[in-house]
Image (tube, rainbow, N blue to C red; front, side):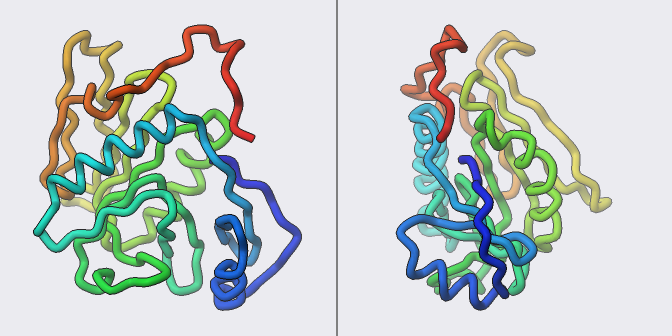
Length: 203
């Protein structure tokens, strides 16, 4: 999804109250709000595939699986983002109505217009969440998954899953929620663009 800068400057509380009255979603970073727009169909398909698999896996285990309409707060003062998929198994989030503050897993499906932000500043924000154990980036234009995991030394380690590199079916592991699945499941029913000149950019 692409974020577009808006002219308002708000406190975190002003943002939370103001956004409730808006017809679209807005992210909040350092007092500024950014309008969120829709992604591509492949982007949406990937997010639905993962969300469905995680929901089935975590049913009855006290975890909440959320998609793009759920907001995550890095702290009470922000930043506030809308991840494509996230999971919280923290009791403090079980009755949350507006914001999730304690996720263990956050997933972003990459779009051309947001890839740099997802890899850079957004990941920097997410790393400030004490409960976060894994940050996953899924490419919507080819079969490729990158998983950043927090190790026992407090360092983020990258594990890549790609059919291009491995040449056979790959099992994706998400250790924060004790989940694994074939990488093909994440891309079920996803149609890739063969000619990049025909791609419709996010608006």
